[in-house]
Image 1 (cartoon, rainbow, N blue to C red):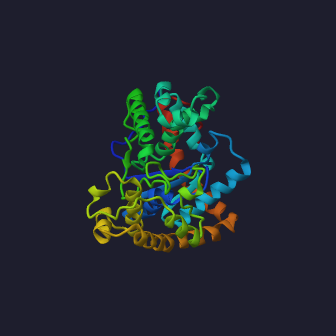
Image 2 (tube, rainbow, N blue to C red):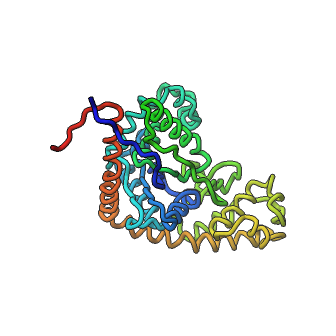
Image 3 (cartoon, helix red, strand yellow):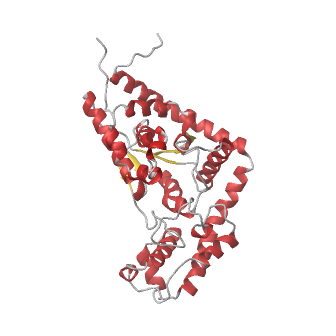
Length: 347
């Protein structure tokens, strides 16, 4: 008879999140993710951050570009304030527990759950049959990314809430199927004035690195002149800023710029409106551009410095991977015991 598996009833707080290396980083990535990730280091909670390169290959990637983009994302983490002495930073493919637990979760999750994922529908379009199996199943791997560390909280944008709900479903089903309380039901962290930064050309669409127009976004690699020019040309309307947030209800471009200013300055959107009530965009945009340049230029400079020394980035990721593996490996071993898999043990 196998020995019973000891399963905890409470879970120490731990934050996990990851970014896919599928293109350049934007202001939206910084305000919606990186800035918040760095702030979480000051809250006394263990933080684990990952460049999810295994997710990137759900669609074909040029190998050299994938390596470069993985390093660039890592550089963005570091330049934005992620401290390897206070957080674990690594790339996903270096920790095999992600793939191993991902397979186990493939056998827990239901196919119908995957077909309901709106991002799969959006990415696969009318040619779902030609998509990779990985594209369909990657929310199960995302669940493994999180639960390999039994993370209790995940900072997510609104567009990722459905995937986190799936993670919660997989954790609950695993616990139920095996009669354990092994995985936490992970909670989302959605907060801040600009967790969803919108396009500078269309305030109804999210700022995206895949948008064909470079004028729609501010890249973390943009120089000061480019940042200022993009903000100056950002789409707005002819009306002045109102004296309450309600006045921005049907003005998506105006609301987007106010939200960006609020997030960059650490103020609430209400405080920004109070300060600039009645101002025309001709006077508001230069203030926003000045703030954006002051915030982002040091990040760009540090990213450039790091990218000039890829071996150092690789060393940081390697050290982080070893730390991550030290946490995930014992958790995976316990999962295998619960499932009934035989594994060798040292005498």
